[in-house]
Image 1 (cartoon, rainbow, N blue to C red):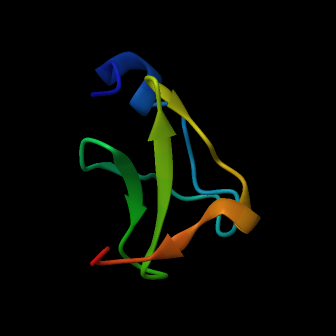
Image 2: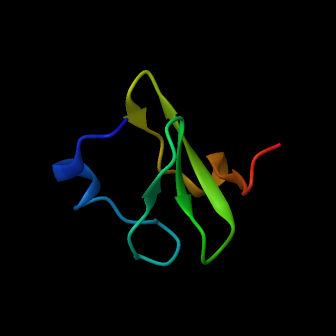
Length: 55
């Protein structure tokens, strides 16, 4: 889980809007993409994004 204070400042690198915390992914429901959170560190690279919902 991402600290609420950090989540307040993180945005999607594709549309620059807020993300939702879904445990092991930060999700942009508007674009249907999820960014992985690895060892508590969000990987906010467009190349690392996966389709949401994750199977």
